[in-house]
Length: 151
Image 1 (tube, rainbow, N blue to C red):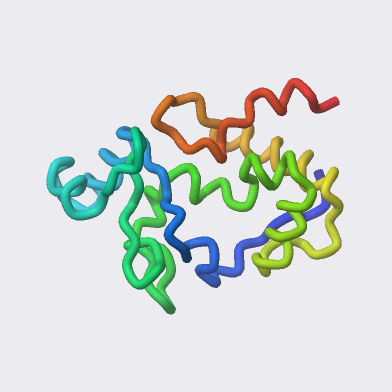
Image 2 (cartoon, one colour):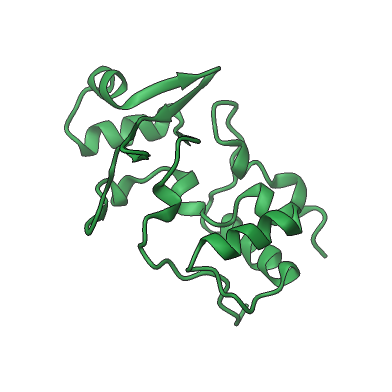
């Protein structure tokens, strides 16, 4: 895979919004340890539940752990969903969602085709063990079914 589909610009746009960053229990434990907090302290101060999933809280319309001019404060232990951007299920199955992401995110190669983006994205997710199987994990990373459709 020679073409570059995405190169992070560290702009923070993917850290913005109230959609929420889903974190599994395993990810919560890693982040809590990184922050030197007990799991209970971390959950109380940094997590809110939406239905049956845990989400990182938002502050000033950004992820709680995003700091302007610094970036991600938990980068070494950031959740899988953060590491996977922009290779989310919606961007891999819906060409119009991909086009919107390409307009929104300055790190996505403006010249890349949808087909090539999908191919590179699925490879990246698989190579980096970012495909989600956990029930409490982010739907955006539930793409195992797409691997069978790649030729």
